[in-house]
Length: 329
Ligand code: HEM
Ligand code: HEM
Image 1 (tube, rainbow, N blue to C red):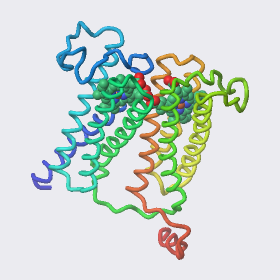
Image 2 (spheres, protein in one colour; image 1 turned 90 degrees about the vertical axis):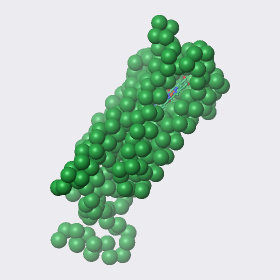
Image 3 (cartoon, helix red, strand yellow; image 1 turned 30 degrees about the horizontal axis):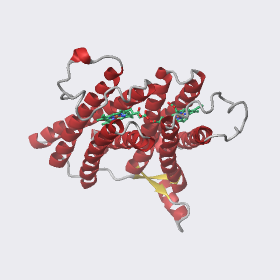
Image 4 (cartoon, helix red, strand yellow; image 1 turned 60 degrees about the vertical axis):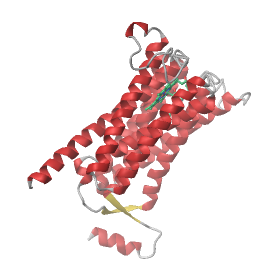
């Protein structure tokens, strides 16, 4: 390896480290945002982009009291994430030659700017449901972009090896993608439950207001029941994909994220139940928001790795049997 190659490898290693800090930092910021809402601190700082009329970066520490700690802290950490995103984007545009990664980083930079503006708008407009839900969902989408950037800049991922053909049908890969999409829908149902203040519309678990199917007396009952049904469906999807991956020796690179997804959805299900049993105590409620983000990240990693490392056989295509035999040979 000549010196230019090794300095470019070192530069890439640092890019990957910073991208990983960005992704993990974003998950923690999502938890911090969840804390702002769970603690009812969304309007502790009533103005934006100023903080009580002062520059947010020089707002004196002794004035940080009560909910201001949550809300103002959230703004400052969000600014740090914005700065990291600018650094990662510039680095990728200067040093990485993958076009898709350049555009992904540009899209993520745009997303974090819009996210900041949505955060400001939700304050100025006094937390309207649509803006708060959009802020929650764009947070999750942005987080996913940062996870993909971190994965794609890892030294292993960047090695130019073509995807390996495997003895697994496209049906499985479609299930992996469907699981990612359904996780987004499940989080959206959770965010609507949360921002229409429907968390206690059904106040028991595992029953639903004393019945298996509750009386749909309000929007809150309907939306929370949909979120509960969604939890059962998502758990079933994640377990199904996990078992199919673990049974297939070809898919070794998907095992770890598949096991992590099973563990996460189980924890997330129990956290959801705890939110109800504790009547929305701050800690389980905040962890449930963060758990949603981690579940989303790991199911996405299963799918992203399946695309990067493997070429799935298409059982529907004519001649696929031949293709599979080719794989076996
Ligand atoms: C990278 C940027 C940001 C991310 C990833 C982010 C993420 C989040 C998340 C995940 C929540 C919780 C949503 C929920 O509980 O359903 C939240 C809440 C909140 N965020 Fe942000 N945020 C960012 C920037 C900002 C900024 C710049 C502000 C400026 C004011 C802001 C203000 C708020 C407020 C007020 C809430 C509470 C909303 C409510 O109670 O309904 N956020 N944020
Ligand atoms: C297993 C998959 C589950 C996932 C991925 C999930 C995800 C989420 C997320 C991400 C949120 C917050 C959305 C936001 O505003 O950012 C949420 C809210 C909520 N979830 Fe879940 N959830 C799951 C299961 C459950 C279960 C089993 C229950 C109840 C038994 C539950 C009850 C709730 C409630 C009540 C809220 C609203 C909390 C509030 O009002 O503050 N969740 N869910």
